Image (cartoon, rainbow, N blue to C red; front, side, top):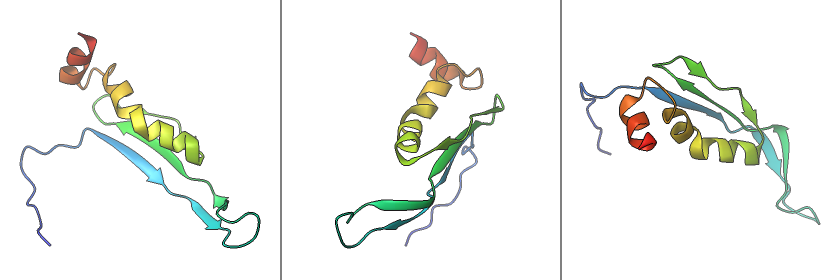
Amino acid sequence: MTKLAPTAEAEVRDVIFVDLGEGYETKKGPRKGEIWWKRQPRARYECLPCQYASPVVHGVDEVRAFITDIRTRHRAICPGHPGIAQSTAA
């Protein structure tokens, strides 16, 4: 396994937190393959330059949709990501 050394140019600007939840898959019977959730998956997004924190999103489909495009949607309006905001506004 190759480890990459951190570079001075690396900077964390935004973060997506995802909790995969806790569920049990039914292995047999007519409900085979269904997942019974004890704790639903959830996610939230934080932008460090502008201090934006999204509301927490709950549920499998909701989390999937949220993480697919939250960074793109937020960066398009965020003053802390000027290069991205300018390029998407054109």
